[in-house]
Image: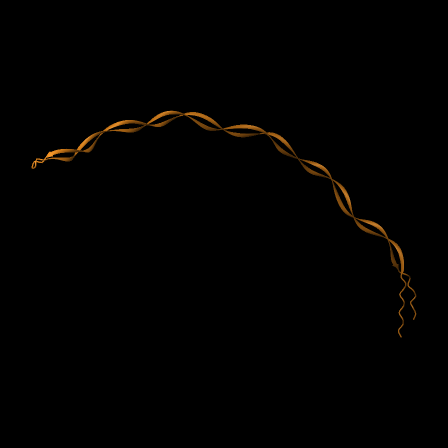
Length: 179
């Protein structure tokens, strides 16, 4: 028959204090210098041009057409009808015969001739005149100046803390069991 196994040694617990670490976020204020841009207006004069229409009266010579009537007497050829009484030599009877005879008539016509008459007429002409003026304007001037600031920075630090724990302790070895 095999021998019975030895019983396990008794576990002895001892209370000890140990140091542990936990991370914490710690703020730090850091002084720093940064460049700051400052803008300020600076007055100055600016020239600009103003266009303006100016009337310039002038007298201009123009030719005006004019109709001038005059009369012309012309001779016109035409025909005229006349009645003529003739005696028939055979019968001795009188007959009326119509004859067309050439005729010249004097005709009076009115004809218009165009003559130009020179005349002075007032005319208004416009001229563009540019006048230069000045006005006050402001330019923004930038200036960089150093400025001290306080900025907040964070770091992760391990903070120690104490904690009590129970740990097993080795007990002196017991005499081997005899079976």
